[in-house]
Image (cartoon, each protein chain N blue to C red):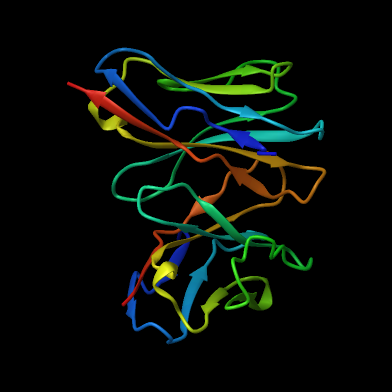
Length: 115
Length: 114
């Protein structure tokens, strides 16, 4: 079974609209971290946002926020007021502290922002 | 400070040759990962080093692939008898141990097997 599932292989969104990228995860470890990375066409991997399993509040970083629903095991990334520069591949990842502390990635969602 | 570096940035090799890819992680990072990414695809996990523990080799696609990490720092990924399907970008990442720490990625090595 996949540990990290990103069900949207590709999305097209109009500029300035908000975007939600889906991510669900599977773990029995009570202590884990969730991450989102952005990979533009240049290929670099850019860390965006982190959510800890014990965090009470949803993480926010500028225009990025993480909609963390622990009971549903979902960690969707929300990008507000999308910009053309947001066009990229986005990866969700999980790190389980009490297993081997290995980071596991989803297959990614390719986001296209339309002018 | 310095980030994760990888060398070479590009490598073109003939089918059947061996190649070595190098990764210099951020100083102090105990965890080191290798991934492979084919064009437009996701990250394929290859191998994971954590401190002095035995590496997690569960992602290596065949016995032609091997990796080592000397002195808990620099890592080398070796591909023997390269095949055309080995062509991809090989990414290295490092991090501190612990679930709250993100990975820092290197720029990758683009391997082309002709």
